[in-house]
Length: 138
Image (cartoon, rainbow, N blue to C red):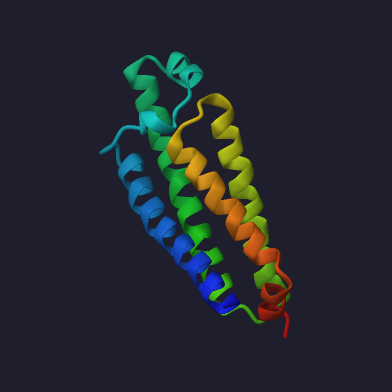
């Protein structure tokens, strides 16, 4: 059963990896604006000028691209297992993701961010299960 749960966690990170890389490239190239669903009201007030918002979107594109790469590394670490470092990578990035989404929820709670928060907490619970730890420890 734990293998299926870990596979589901790794697949989730793999899908996020692809989505983040594609989205990051679109933001960084200036082909897409930031998604207003994920932006707080204070952000929209701070970046009300289109040019400032565009420059910020390009910078966030590069950040999103890097996050996508790290999500891919996390997916690989979960798929691979067999070492303590893979377990640390998986738990570390999951904790970072929970903190990141929590920060976004602080500004503007929406269903998309809330669903990501729930998914990351579920992944953290799976990674902390004793059977999951045995998957990573040789």
